[in-house]
Length: 269
Image (cartoon, rainbow, N blue to C red; front, side, top):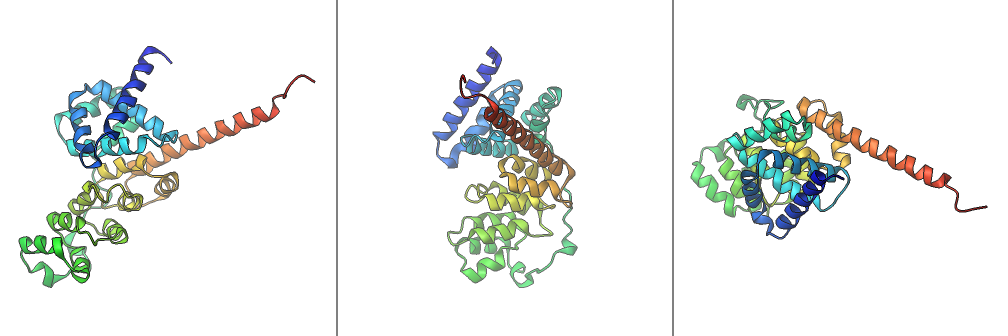
């Protein structure tokens, strides 16, 4: 390992320690501040190292990468995101570039195709529905889960009685409104749940930039499903396949090393 590699690994180690020492509620904000202050070249290098460690199965990386991915989403179309993307393309850091892509969604939401519309609920004002979402009883919660307003969904996601299966259903809803699906992704309470991430990544109505950011956070079985999915965006599918190819290569190398060890003589005859 040369001096540049050693410095990059130390930067990653510092970043992991720094973010792990913080309350999960403020990790994304801190990660964004870090991304905005570091030069693009260093950020791309750190992202490359984090993705590499994630592929190797380093458990410490998952939470750090999750915070960084959410921070990248928060950067949106700011100059910082554009500079990072340009640097990743220039360096041919394809996986990092995919974390910064903003392709059109695989499916575009058409309100005329929306099913199960609760017309009585939607006749109420947005302010009333947002307030109801904070204190709704179980029956009202079910009715509000299909609300078109992101603010209603944001409040509902904070409801103490909302369950993971309900959030998964909201994330998997098709056709789905992209701004509502984005709210689920931004939820600090639910976005870390693997089943919620899987539902969002597999939903062709999820904004593609969000689906791409979720791919490296998923376990291999879920990535395998994405690689075979036909409805999702081709970039999401290709990203999943890239990770699978790398995983197979690593498994092949590990098996070859194990076979070689079995063939080694245990000592002099």
